[in-house]
Length: 379
Ligand SMILES: Nc1ncnc2c1ncn2[C@@H]1O[C@H](COP(=O)(O)OP(=O)(O)O)[C@@H](O)[C@H]1O
Ligand SMILES: [Mg+2]
Image (tube, rainbow, N blue to C red; front, side):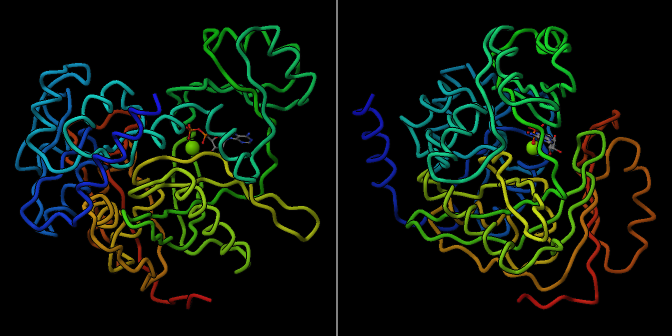
């Protein structure tokens, strides 16, 4: 195991020269994040090859090359990795075996450590606490008995979450009373889980940070997130936070990136708790990829999170993350995207549509970013 990790690290180091324009970026996943990464790569004169199982995808539509194959198709994975100069991904549930196969043929960035830890809520929380970073109190739950004793320890309300594969609030159940234990355990089909104490947060914020191949890091300003039906609704920049708390959030994001030997952009979600007139930060989770709450950077910064990620994985220097405008990003979910013409008619409003054919409820179809003329100077 050690030897393998070492070999992967050596393979990655041996190609530490920046990839010149004309090189090819391989992206696993065909969604809107892949699409925006592909567009950013094109701006830098880089080619893009998308790997996704779907017949059509928002990302493949804007990329020069696409492979349509399953993430378990070893021959297709090897051919893909051989055809590109670096592999990255736009979703965190890339199977570990897929990443391992690819890494024998091309550098995979971010690397295996970040991928493995972010896929498992228990490993993620242990990793964060190991760095001295606060999280919600939690307990491992494998059986109904574990859940009952975890509820006795952490109290209610609490949130039961599957360790793996959760997103947009899926795979989690709030428990308001210990008598709900059996129903909650059934609701997650007895999957390996964790119980988290319910955090009475004042607000949710996030930081998009990046770490380059040479270990330097950069963090964008903190955004304040509002969710609707468990899906991100708006991100407002800057978050209403004391400058010292905002700086602490950016520092924590950079510490996580360093702790993961990270290369690329990482999204870190926080709960902001109030204790008297003091505010405390607690990390909720992180995503080893560009993040929905960083979409505002496309319009309010010289270098977007998408370009920043491509720069990092291509071994380029990171761009300056400072913003030139305040901004509010709003997701267009399902039929909300039908209002595109209204948004397109407004001044200082950037419209981004992902080209998805069908506007199903709950589906992210696009987003708009309104730039605010009353710019708040960074502290
Ligand atoms: N321990 C908690 N206490 C209070 N609210 C929580 C807790 N965990 C999750 N939530 C709420 O549920 C949302 C989704 O949970 P999260 O762990 O971020 O999963 P997902 O992978 O679905 O984004 C959070 O943004 C927050 O609003
Ligand atoms: Mg989340």
